[in-house]
Image 1 (cartoon, rainbow, N blue to C red):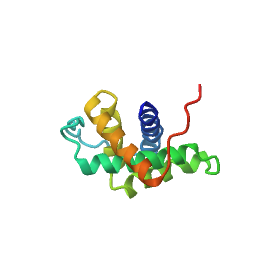
Image 2 (cartoon, one colour):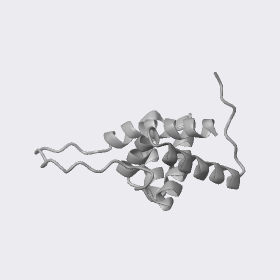
Image 3 (cartoon, one colour):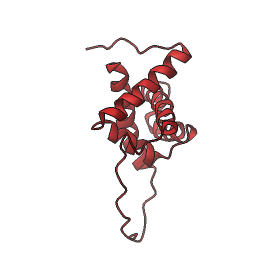
Image 4 (tube, rainbow, N blue to C red):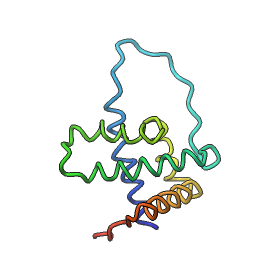
Amino acid sequence: MKLIGTILAGATLAFAPAALAQTAPQTTPAPAAPAAAPATSATVTDAEVSQFATAALEVEKIRKDTTVADADKGAKMMAAATGAGLTAERFNAIGQAMATDTALNARVQAAASAKMAASGTTPAAKQN
């Protein structure tokens, strides 16, 4: 179960720079947006947990895929998140919240484990 958390955390961290790189620079300063409430277990729906688990597992595959050029991985990772039904911002918010919210982390890990079991895949053995 810990390996799944590591995979999901790695997928989230790998995706964050890609999502930021996809943001077009603004030529004029935008008005300051109100700070969004941080994601917590209570604010993340079951549907979002499922979507996040789906996207994170796909993002991890993309991150490890040596046949995909590094320059193309960001776009593919973003497509994985949006294909699962999340914006890049929401994907990153949930991933960041998992680092401090143990209840959310457990919910996502359970969803990822269920998805892996349903697809017949298991996490690879952790290598040191």
